[in-house]
Structures are given as C-alpha cells and as structure tokens.
Length: 279
Image 1: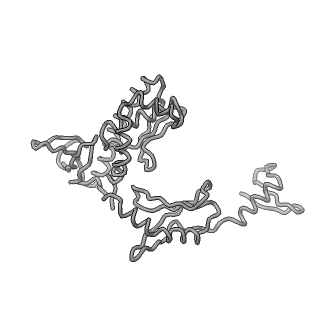
Image 2: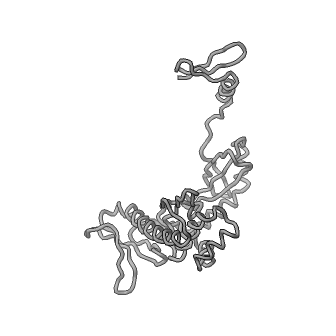
Image 3: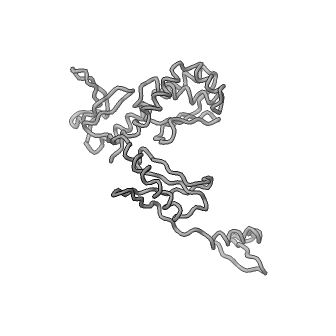
C-alpha cells in the first residue's frame, strides 16, 4: 500500500514497511507522474481512403522521434509508432495523410494460405499439398504420389490440422537449423549455446554475444540454401557482432551461396509470411 503525506513544502512517499521511504524530491516526482499520467489511449484508430476504411494499431515508443508507419505481414495490419510526447490527434492526421500508402501496401500483401486441407505449402522450397487423413494413425508426415506430387499428410481431427502443421514445420526447422548452425560453428571455432525457433516478423534470425541464436521457423519453407545461409550469417556474428566488411568476409568464407540467398530473401522472402495465417 502506498500513501502520500504532506511534510512542510514537500511530498514524501511512505511505504507500509516501517522505515522505508523515498527522498522528498523523488516523492514529488512520483506524485507529479500520477498527476500528469496520460489518460487511457485507444489501441487503434480508423483511417479512411476513398470508400475504404482501415484500422491502424497505435504503438508508443520511448525512443521514437517521429511518427512512422509499417505493415505487419502476418497480422496484415498497419502499425503507427508514436514518439513519447506525440498526441492522438497528430497520429490521426499523420495516418490519414498516408491513407493511400496504407491501402496500397495492404493491397500488395500476398493472399493468406492457412494450414488447411488442400492448401499448398512449400517445404524446403518444394510445394506440398496438405491432405487430411482422418482415419490414419500418426501426426504429420510426407508422401509422394505416383504422379510425383508431394503431399503433407495430417492425421486426426480436422480442427487440429493448423496446430499440427505448425508444430511439424517448427520441428523440421529446428532440426535443419541446429545441424547447419553447429556445422558452421565448428568451422569458425565458436560455440552455439542455445537455438530458439520463433515466428519473427521483422528479422529472419538473431544472435547474442552469449551464443544464443534465434531463427524464424518460416525458413523451413524456403529452399535449403536460404536456410543454410541464415545459419552461417548468425553463427558468423559469434566472430563479429556487427555487419562490418570483416563480418561479411567471414560469412562469404564459409557460405558460398550468400549473395544468391540474400537475393532470394529480398525478392521472395515476404511471401513466406502468408503461410499459416487466416484472412
């Protein structure tokens, strides 16, 4: 429990625990923070562009210095980042002035491909059609039909297809990325401490100085040389924690298909975000 009491010209913040209190100046700052606390803000604002209307999600960031807009490819929505002292009125004005940009970017998003019976999903760059096998045992496995068509078989109830395909792809991604990462770590004389598989929208991978690597599971959808390059890229950060010329020389020394993979990600990487989501 926290209470305020007046002591001469200052406010002192007293805690329930005896003998525990802040200085008068700190207490006054805390009191002012309560007085000037920003009222509850809306999470989204409506933006109009012609006959269309879009919901734009608001995000206030303490390091932001200006208003910025970006499109989240998986949530398929526009996000407006506001500076600490920005106002809702300014945010609305900024978003409405960029309504045409929002409409164009959202309109260019590739069509969503949910994990459902009949959806064609790339696995290691090869198209696989999801086929529901309700009466069979197992979880998820691959088959090749006599015609040469690759299929991804999913057993169990139809309601579980989405989750089971997600889980399967994440397991396959972890297996391939762990193998490639440890191979590159051995070649570079470094050690990988931990590998995490996540659904990252802003980057394909990341690395910490402690040896923890994180990758997007969606890399299992790409051709193998793309996944392999990302493993080489992140492991190379254990040698150079930057993107200096020396870092890129390190990547190029161990991965001969760096430029080819980067070009693929630039031109087709965004398409990977449409899989496993619903309109």
